[in-house]
Image (cartoon, rainbow, N blue to C red; front, side):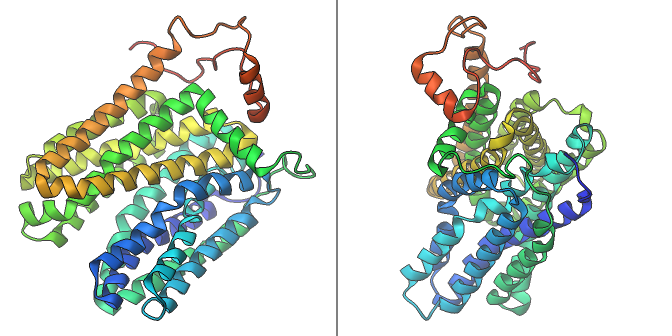
Amino acid sequence: MPTRYRLPLYIAGAAAARTGDEMSGPALLLVGIAVTDSASAGSALLSGIMISAAVGGPVFGAMLDRSAAPGRLLTGALAAYSAVLVAILLTLGHLPLPVVIATAVFGGLLGPALAGGWTSQLPRLVEPERLPRANALDAMTYNLASLTGPALAGAIAILAGATSGVVAAVALIVLALPAAWTLPGNPSASGRGPDTSVVADLAAGFVAIVRARFLARATVASVISYIGVGMLVTCSPLLGEEALGGANSGTFLLAALAAASLAANALLAKRPDSLRPDTAVLGSTLVLAAAFLLAATVSPVYLFVAMALAGAGAGPQLTALFAVRHREAPERLRGQIFTTGASLKITGYAVGAGIGGPIATWSLSGSLVVAAGFEMLAAVAFVLFTVAGRGPTARGPKDTASPREQRAAALSGERVDQFPDERGDDLGRL
C-alpha cells in the first residue's frame, strides 16, 4: 500500500546510490593503476567488484523479500559496500594484491542492492495508476548515473587524484542512506516466521522467473542484449582513438548514449501510457542492433548518430523491463526477482566486456558487428519464447501439472496447471 514516503526522496536516494555505484568501478580502475602502476591491477579490481554480482543479487533479493523492514536491510548493504570501497583504499599497496581483490569480490556481492534493491520497493510507494510514471522516473536515475558516474570519476581523478574519485563515490552512496532507511516496511513479511529457508526462497525465485513466460522472455532478451552493450562500451576507447583522435574521446560517445537514454525516458515519464512493455523490449533490441551496425562504420558523424540511436533503444528497454517485472513478479518474490535480474544483466555486461576487447584487437568494426549479432540473437530469443507459448505443446487450462511441476509450484507459490494468462502481452499481432 502507498505510504507517506515521498517519491522525490526515493528518486534522490536511488540516483545518489546508483551514481556512486557507476563511479566506483572506473574510480577503482584508476586508483589501481595509480597505486600499483599496473593496468592489469586496475582491471582486476574492476572485474573483482563486478564478477560476484551474479551470486550476491539472488541472495540479497531473497533476504529483502523475507524482511519486514527492507529499507533497513538496504541501508546495511549500502553501508557495507561503502566500507568495502574504503577498505580497498586503505589496503591497496599495503597488502598483497590478491587480498585486495578478494575484498573487491566481497563488495561485488552487494552491488545489485544499489540497483534492483531500490526498484523492487516502488509498488509500496505509489498507487498502481502512478506506477508507470514512477517506473520511468526510476529508470532515468540509471541513465543519469551512467551519464555522470564515469565522467565524475575521471574528472575528479584529474583534478584531485585517483583516490579522491573513490572517496566521492563513497560520499554519494552515504548520501543515499537516509532515503533507504526510511523506505516503508513490507506488511506481508510482518509477523511471518521464516517458514522456508533462504535456499528454498532462492529456488522459488528462479522457478518464478522461469515459469512466468513473459518475465523469462524479457529477462533472457535483456541479458543477451547486455552482452552487446558490454562489447560497445569496451570498444568505445578504440572508437574514440580511431574516429576522434584520442582514446579519452570515447567517453564523449558514451555520454551521447547516456544522454539519449535519459531524454527517451524523460519523454516516457511524461507519457507513461505510450509504452507497451513487451513490444518495447523487442523493439529496443532491434534499435540497438541497427545502432551497432551504424557504429561499425567508424565514421565520426555516424558514430554520434549511432550512439544517439543506441540510447533511444537502451533507455526504453530498461523502462519496459522494469514494467514487465513489476507486472509479473509475485509480491513475496519481488525483491529477489529484481536483484536477480540486475545480477544477470551485470553478468551479461561482464561477458560482453570480456569478449569485446579481444575481438576488437582483431577488428574494431568486426567487434561491433558481433555486438549487433547479440542484439539480433536477443530478438530471436524473444520471438521464440512468444511462439513457444502459443504452440501446440502449451498446456491448456484443463491440463494437469506433473508431480515435479507441482513441487516447483510449491516452492514458487505459483499455479502450474496452465500457462500464465496473456495479460499485458501485446505481441499477438506479430
